Length: 454
Image (cartoon, rainbow, N blue to C red; front, top):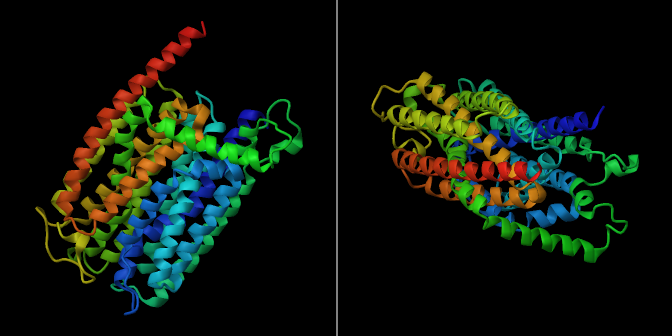
């Protein structure tokens, strides 16, 4: 297998590892508020929205140190250890306690920062300018299969259940924990892209550490590691104030807000709609599947468009904005405004039309499709613009995205649905405009580079 084939295989393995892990974790996030409402214990007083706010709040802060961690221990070990903490968070639901629930939330927030920084680094060093768009699409499509498989399982397991029993909860979360652990071990199959002069033994080196040490014979020395860690932190700070990243920060922030909405709030809204009948709880799973289908189609199609890129990234982002605006409008018409805050018994209210399951699931698909538009293009432009400092750049990306997700999960505890949709509409418009400007800057830099090489 040639060097390009090995790089592509690394991307595919990376995608499958994340697919298994997030089959478990995204399914957990999608159902946890519903599970907590049905939890048969007076000793547990947790909130799924609060847990997610803690996760993303810690996630955002931890992104400041994540490049240093990944630099020191390498992305393979980083992703494996992070995956173990993800699995521990899921396993906590087998027998939850308030203290363990919130402690696990803090730990998985730290793990998320390290995991996604390492992922961005692996993606960047296994891509070139001509393949970064394709590889982003492949990774994104494989990742979003997690929404399909996990939520299909939830639909089958909970079909016809009006209440989630302790047995139902334990069965689901034991299965999800095992699935997450499988993904953790897949990361060890990733290998460093082999340079022409490298020996076979060098291929198994930790990816990022090998890149940064550049063949140093004393890679384990403590002063060297501390220096690398400090350098990665400084680079992240410098990248965060560049013109390109400041422009992209608005659109990145929007993806954090809509991530919260489609992954935590919208499924809860559907499950709370008593007008959807006795299967409302199982419809959470179908909604997640529809989101996943939209993500998979978007990731695959837009990855191919990037491979044969003639029009730039802006048309894809514009399509994502229009798709999301249509989804938000239909949700506004179809879902009761108090659905995000409804008690265990749900809500009997309706919005402006007779609640329709078909419209609700169409909106799920549109949310996933629009999300893939934004995220594939953000992965592509960041990987292109900050190729030499990919770990630090992706850490800044996740820092902004996660802090906005934390804000959104916090206000989801208090705001009615129509106010949440208004915030998304305003942020989506501003984020798209800022992306267009960042793309213009990136294209200008590319043209200048082409001229210089003549």
